[in-house]
Image (cartoon, rainbow, N blue to C red; front, side, top):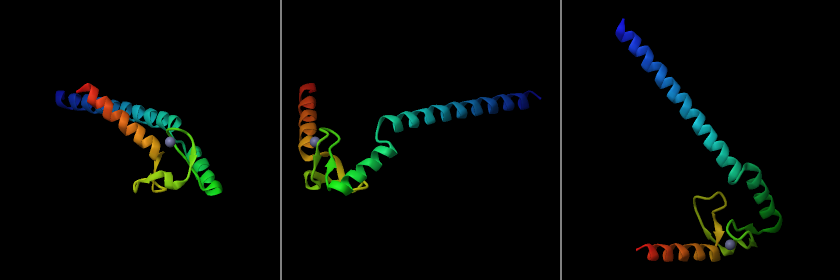
Length: 102
Ligand SMILES: [Zn+2]
């Protein structure tokens, strides 16, 4: 009798935990989708690229030729999000940040 009660209690707890985890996860994904690249943004980017042949850099926001981006095999268009100049700036600033912290 006691054992079954405990089992029922444990089951209820784990179900509540799973529910909570689901809520947190869905809220996280929803926020992420809203803040970063949404489907509409991506669609607009593809259309812009198809019309002008240029890609917009995520860091400086300028439209540049595909040759100004490094290749990224993981990306859908095989190009990085940032242009070469911005990549250099980012990597240099990270390098100096790390150097200062040492
Ligand atoms: Zn850039």
